[in-house]
Amino acid sequence: MKKKAVIILICAAAAAAALWAAREYPEPSPVFESEPISDEIFARMYGKSYKEDCTVPREELRYLRLSHYGFDGQIHEGEMVVNAAIADEVTEIFRELFEARYPIEKMRLIDDYDADDESSMADNNSSAFNYRTISGTDKLSNHSRGMAIDINPLYNPYIHSNTGTEACEPANALPYTDRSLDFPYKIDETDLCYQVFTAHGFSWGGSWSSAKDYQHFEYTE
Image (cartoon, rainbow, N blue to C red; front, side, top):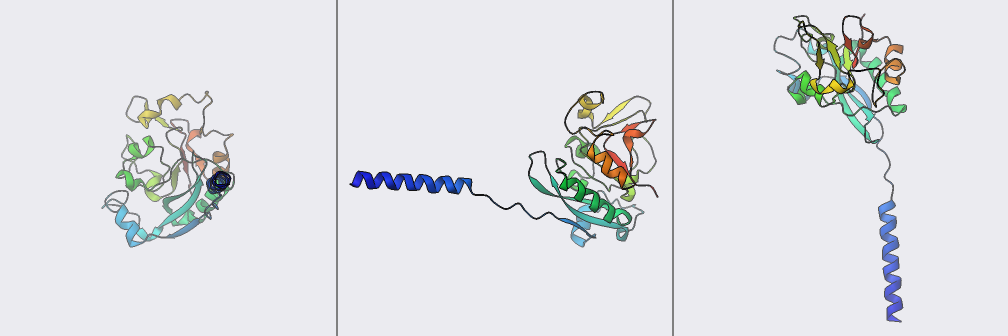
Protein backbone atom coordinates (compact mmCIF):
# COMPACT_ATOMS: atom_id res chain seq x y z
CA MET A 1 0.00 0.00 0.00
CA LYS A 2 2.81 2.35 0.93
CA LYS A 3 4.58 1.59 -2.37
CA LYS A 4 1.40 2.46 -4.30
CA ALA A 5 1.03 5.73 -2.38
CA VAL A 6 4.63 6.67 -3.14
CA ILE A 7 4.10 5.98 -6.86
CA ILE A 8 0.96 8.14 -6.84
CA LEU A 9 2.84 10.95 -5.13
CA ILE A 10 5.72 10.72 -7.62
CA CYS A 11 3.30 10.81 -10.57
CA ALA A 12 1.44 13.78 -9.07
CA ALA A 13 4.72 15.64 -8.53
CA ALA A 14 5.83 14.91 -12.10
CA ALA A 15 2.50 16.15 -13.49
CA ALA A 16 2.71 19.33 -11.42
CA ALA A 17 6.28 19.92 -12.62
CA ALA A 18 5.19 19.44 -16.24
CA LEU A 19 2.34 21.91 -15.81
CA TRP A 20 4.72 24.42 -14.20
CA ALA A 21 7.24 24.06 -17.03
CA ALA A 22 4.52 24.44 -19.68
CA ARG A 23 2.89 27.49 -18.10
CA GLU A 24 2.52 30.45 -20.44
CA TYR A 25 3.38 34.00 -19.53
CA PRO A 26 1.44 36.78 -21.23
CA GLU A 27 3.54 38.76 -23.68
CA PRO A 28 4.35 42.29 -22.50
CA SER A 29 2.09 45.01 -23.84
CA PRO A 30 3.74 46.79 -26.77
CA VAL A 31 4.99 50.31 -26.15
CA PHE A 32 5.13 53.11 -28.73
CA GLU A 33 5.73 56.36 -26.87
CA SER A 34 7.30 59.71 -27.66
CA GLU A 35 8.32 62.19 -24.98
CA PRO A 36 10.56 65.25 -24.53
CA ILE A 37 14.17 64.61 -23.59
CA SER A 38 14.18 64.26 -19.80
CA ASP A 39 17.12 65.32 -17.63
CA GLU A 40 17.97 61.65 -17.09
CA ILE A 41 18.11 60.90 -20.84
CA PHE A 42 19.97 64.14 -21.59
CA ALA A 43 22.61 63.19 -19.02
CA ARG A 44 23.21 59.99 -21.02
CA MET A 45 23.47 61.96 -24.27
CA TYR A 46 25.46 65.04 -23.32
CA GLY A 47 29.06 64.97 -24.48
CA LYS A 48 28.33 61.87 -26.58
CA SER A 49 25.58 62.00 -29.22
CA TYR A 50 24.72 65.51 -28.04
CA LYS A 51 28.14 67.16 -28.44
CA GLU A 52 29.02 70.38 -26.63
CA ASP A 53 28.84 72.24 -29.95
CA CYS A 54 25.51 70.70 -31.00
CA THR A 55 23.36 73.32 -32.73
CA VAL A 56 20.09 71.38 -32.43
CA PRO A 57 18.07 72.57 -29.42
CA ARG A 58 17.27 69.81 -26.97
CA GLU A 59 13.61 70.87 -27.22
CA GLU A 60 13.58 69.83 -30.90
CA LEU A 61 14.35 66.21 -30.05
CA ARG A 62 12.15 63.42 -28.76
CA TYR A 63 12.94 60.22 -26.86
CA LEU A 64 11.04 57.21 -28.21
CA ARG A 65 10.29 53.91 -26.52
CA LEU A 66 9.49 51.34 -29.19
CA SER A 67 8.61 47.67 -28.93
CA HIS A 68 10.16 45.39 -31.54
CA TYR A 69 10.74 41.73 -32.22
CA GLY A 70 14.36 40.66 -31.83
CA PHE A 71 16.24 38.04 -33.80
CA ASP A 72 15.25 35.64 -31.00
CA GLY A 73 11.57 36.07 -31.89
CA GLN A 74 10.86 37.71 -28.52
CA ILE A 75 9.45 41.18 -27.83
CA HIS A 76 11.98 43.76 -26.69
CA GLU A 77 11.64 47.42 -25.75
CA GLY A 78 13.97 49.63 -27.75
CA GLU A 79 14.83 53.31 -27.47
CA MET A 80 15.69 55.98 -29.98
CA VAL A 81 16.08 59.76 -30.22
CA VAL A 82 14.67 61.53 -33.28
CA ASN A 83 13.64 65.02 -34.33
CA ALA A 84 10.29 66.12 -32.90
CA ALA A 85 9.09 66.87 -36.44
CA ILE A 86 9.09 63.15 -37.32
CA ALA A 87 8.50 61.56 -33.92
CA ASP A 88 4.87 60.62 -34.57
CA GLU A 89 5.70 59.30 -38.05
CA VAL A 90 8.55 57.18 -36.71
CA THR A 91 6.40 55.83 -33.89
CA GLU A 92 3.81 54.71 -36.44
CA ILE A 93 6.49 53.12 -38.66
CA PHE A 94 7.77 50.99 -35.80
CA ARG A 95 4.23 50.08 -34.81
CA GLU A 96 3.66 48.74 -38.33
CA LEU A 97 6.96 46.84 -38.29
CA PHE A 98 6.08 45.38 -34.88
CA GLU A 99 2.65 44.24 -36.02
CA ALA A 100 4.32 42.45 -38.94
CA ARG A 101 6.91 40.92 -36.53
CA TYR A 102 9.73 42.49 -38.52
CA PRO A 103 13.02 41.49 -36.80
CA ILE A 104 15.33 44.19 -35.44
CA GLU A 105 18.15 42.81 -33.31
CA LYS A 106 18.62 45.73 -30.93
CA MET A 107 17.69 49.37 -30.56
CA ARG A 108 19.73 51.26 -27.97
CA LEU A 109 20.82 54.86 -27.75
CA ILE A 110 24.15 55.26 -29.53
CA ASP A 111 25.41 56.85 -26.30
CA ASP A 112 25.74 53.31 -24.94
CA TYR A 113 28.58 53.03 -27.49
CA ASP A 114 30.02 56.45 -26.56
CA ALA A 115 28.34 57.75 -29.74
CA ASP A 116 30.88 55.81 -31.82
CA ASP A 117 29.04 54.97 -35.02
CA GLU A 118 31.37 52.14 -36.04
CA SER A 119 30.96 50.37 -32.69
CA SER A 120 27.19 50.73 -32.78
CA MET A 121 26.93 49.45 -36.35
CA ALA A 122 29.34 46.56 -35.72
CA ASP A 123 27.04 45.43 -32.89
CA ASN A 124 24.06 45.65 -35.29
CA ASN A 125 22.44 48.37 -33.22
CA SER A 126 19.66 50.36 -34.90
CA SER A 127 19.83 54.06 -34.01
CA ALA A 128 18.98 57.60 -35.10
CA PHE A 129 20.21 60.88 -33.54
CA ASN A 130 23.97 61.46 -33.34
CA TYR A 131 25.48 64.90 -33.86
CA ARG A 132 28.28 63.98 -36.26
CA THR A 133 29.61 64.49 -39.77
CA ILE A 134 29.18 62.10 -42.67
CA SER A 135 32.05 59.61 -42.58
CA GLY A 136 35.09 60.90 -44.48
CA THR A 137 33.66 64.41 -44.91
CA ASP A 138 33.16 67.62 -42.92
CA LYS A 139 29.44 67.77 -43.76
CA LEU A 140 26.88 67.19 -41.03
CA SER A 141 24.85 64.02 -41.39
CA ASN A 142 21.06 64.04 -41.23
CA HIS A 143 21.56 61.96 -38.09
CA SER A 144 22.76 65.22 -36.55
CA ARG A 145 19.22 66.56 -36.70
CA GLY A 146 17.57 63.31 -35.74
CA MET A 147 16.12 63.02 -39.25
CA ALA A 148 17.78 59.72 -40.22
CA ILE A 149 17.50 56.16 -38.92
CA ASP A 150 19.77 53.15 -39.46
CA ILE A 151 18.23 49.67 -39.30
CA ASN A 152 20.14 46.39 -38.75
CA PRO A 153 23.37 48.04 -39.96
CA LEU A 154 25.61 44.98 -39.78
CA TYR A 155 23.61 43.28 -42.52
CA ASN A 156 23.03 46.51 -44.44
CA PRO A 157 26.38 48.34 -44.63
CA TYR A 158 27.35 51.79 -45.83
CA ILE A 159 29.61 51.47 -48.90
CA HIS A 160 31.36 54.64 -50.06
CA SER A 161 34.54 56.20 -51.43
CA ASN A 162 34.48 59.43 -49.41
CA THR A 163 38.20 59.17 -48.66
CA GLY A 164 39.24 58.14 -52.18
CA THR A 165 39.15 54.37 -51.67
CA GLU A 166 36.11 52.16 -51.26
CA ALA A 167 35.15 51.58 -47.64
CA CYS A 168 32.60 49.40 -45.90
CA GLU A 169 31.01 50.51 -42.63
CA PRO A 170 30.92 48.73 -40.32
CA ALA A 171 34.13 46.96 -41.26
CA ASN A 172 32.79 43.56 -40.14
CA ALA A 173 29.92 43.84 -42.67
CA LEU A 174 32.08 42.85 -45.67
CA PRO A 175 30.23 39.52 -46.12
CA TYR A 176 27.03 41.53 -46.74
CA THR A 177 28.30 43.96 -49.38
CA ASP A 178 27.33 41.71 -52.30
CA ARG A 179 23.64 42.53 -52.54
CA SER A 180 23.03 39.94 -55.25
CA LEU A 181 23.30 37.28 -52.53
CA ASP A 182 20.42 36.05 -50.40
CA PHE A 183 20.85 36.34 -46.64
CA PRO A 184 18.66 37.13 -43.62
CA TYR A 185 17.89 40.72 -42.59
CA LYS A 186 18.84 42.19 -45.98
CA ILE A 187 17.05 45.43 -46.81
CA ASP A 188 16.15 45.89 -50.47
CA GLU A 189 13.15 47.20 -52.37
CA THR A 190 11.18 44.00 -51.70
CA ASP A 191 11.78 44.22 -47.94
CA LEU A 192 9.00 45.34 -45.60
CA CYS A 193 11.26 47.84 -43.84
CA TYR A 194 11.93 49.63 -47.14
CA GLN A 195 8.25 49.57 -48.04
CA VAL A 196 7.03 50.97 -44.71
CA PHE A 197 9.65 53.72 -44.41
CA THR A 198 9.23 54.93 -47.99
CA ALA A 199 5.43 54.86 -47.64
CA HIS A 200 5.88 57.35 -44.79
CA GLY A 201 7.96 59.73 -46.91
CA PHE A 202 11.49 58.55 -46.09
CA SER A 203 14.16 58.03 -48.74
CA TRP A 204 16.50 55.03 -48.71
CA GLY A 205 20.29 55.18 -48.87
CA GLY A 206 20.35 52.03 -50.96
CA SER A 207 18.95 54.08 -53.84
CA TRP A 208 21.85 56.55 -53.88
CA SER A 209 24.08 56.58 -56.95
CA SER A 210 27.44 57.83 -55.58
CA ALA A 211 27.37 55.63 -52.47
CA LYS A 212 25.14 52.95 -51.03
CA ASP A 213 23.85 53.12 -47.48
CA TYR A 214 21.58 50.11 -47.19
CA GLN A 215 20.79 50.61 -43.50
CA HIS A 216 19.85 54.28 -43.87
CA PHE A 217 16.45 55.97 -44.09
CA GLU A 218 16.15 59.74 -43.92
CA TYR A 219 13.38 62.29 -44.00
CA THR A 220 13.93 65.46 -45.98
CA GLU A 221 11.43 68.29 -45.89
